Amino acid sequence: MNTLIYTSCLGLFCLFAEIFNLRKLLIPAVVIGITAIFGVNYMEWNQGGSFYNDMLRIDHFSVAFSSLALVIGLLIFVMTADYYKNEQQHISDYLAILIFTLCGALIMLSYANMAMLFLGIEILSISLYIMAGSKRFDTKSNEAGFKYFLMGAFASGFLLFGIALIYGVTNSFNLQKIGEYVMNHDALTISPLFYIGMMLMLVAMLFKVAAAPFHFWSPDVYEGSPALITAFMSTLVKIAAFGALYRLFANCFMGTLTYVESTLVIAAVASLAIGNFTALHQTNFKRLMAYSGISHAGYMLLGVISLYVGTASALFYYSAGYAFATIGAFAVAIPVFHAMQNEGIDAFNGLGKKSPLLAALLTMSMLSLAGIPPFAGFLGKYYIFSKAIQGGHVTLTLIAVIASMIGAYYYLKVVLAMYTKEGNDTEIEVSPLYVMVAVFCVAMSLVLGLFPDVLMNLI
Amino acid sequence: MGETTLQAIPQNWYLLLSTFLFCIGVIGVLFRRNAIIILMCVELMLNAVNLLLVSFSAYANNADGQVFVFFIMVVAAAEVAVGLALLVSIYRNVMSTDIDVLSKLKG
Image (cartoon, rainbow over all chains, first blue to last red):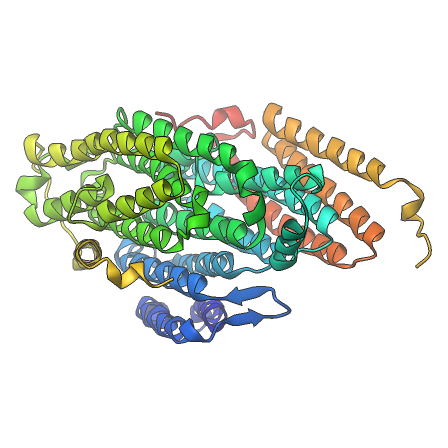
């Protein structure tokens, strides 16, 4: 609870800092602030409970996922110091909007009422529409922002219609009360409106996590947005939306999971197939990461499908592995793109010779994304797959294993470009901040891969 | 509680009307090419939901639904403000509000 309040205050502080001309101190202040909030969040571990008439509920799940969201935020804020060094006049706006995005994510991870789910999603999305379109004179960025806006607003309409129908049947927005309604009724006596509402909400949530067949916005938006924002979107939004989806099903729709299972299975298989096959022939790195994100959404959906065997820890571990690998990859890619003025995979040509450290860091991030031991990506897949088998989804797991083998090919394509292809001799200057972030992410991937118990037994 | 004016009409009619309005909104978003009309269709979708919430709320004598409508109105206003701002910056760059112009991102 305090986590959310302090994060909002930090966002307001950023807006006021501009009035008092504190721009120089702003980024260090935000980094220290987020670290302090991480501490506050840690203190809430055993002090859960419900707040404000059961609008928010803090439990182990929400504290663990909120910590991950804060760490992602922290890594991104460290990188803003270099990324926005030529845009000092807007820095307080950018930081404030990014912090409000984080607030939205925190709400989505601890809601106990449909109203908070809606508000969380909107706070997160509206901030990101602005950030996606934040390069005002770049048509691509404008286009990305507007496409994201249209698709997001469209999806919100479905979410709201779903919520309204469920309210009509149960007379409540409270997750627990809706959950009780489901438990107290036989599957056949639940009003059909409830099922329609649930499907509409599911469609909206699949939109937000960018799972096929509702994924088509994500490659365009990821490609057009500024690279740092792409890194933020591909990690924070996906994880917050999966946290929200898991919470929705675990607290509310548990009893009806078997009726939507086939829909979720279709979405998972489609995400795995479309994500991995379309990624094979991408030449733009950000688009590649978008399709990689779609396929990872497919793996994470496996965790939601087999929810009844208790997949919260596996999903959390997978999210952490995915987030560290993706941010690590972007921390290397951003300075390289900047130096080469090119966002294709060919920007990495010859990086192995020019900058062995960066190349090694990117290679390790890519191996983690591909799911190769000893990195966290491997164990994350292992835990999700074993839970799915425990839940009786053997065929689905087999499809996912095959998909992850295909996936390894396009991650290795980036690695091959760095070590086997000749590049031009443009100098690549890298701020130590990016190296620091990348080293931290790769180290976390390794530590989590070698000592999975740190996170696995949390929730 | 006595019967309110709203309850003079059967509940299913409200449901049908708002579903109908919602579908008009969805079809508009999918088929119209002008960005401003698409924005209006999104608003239509949200207002169909508002109507539905208010009617459910009136029939159940439960105020939660009407409070939710306020949240939707506030968020819709914020959303439209951001959407129009993005549209203005697009218009300055490409001098058009036709969304078919937005085709730089492909692959």
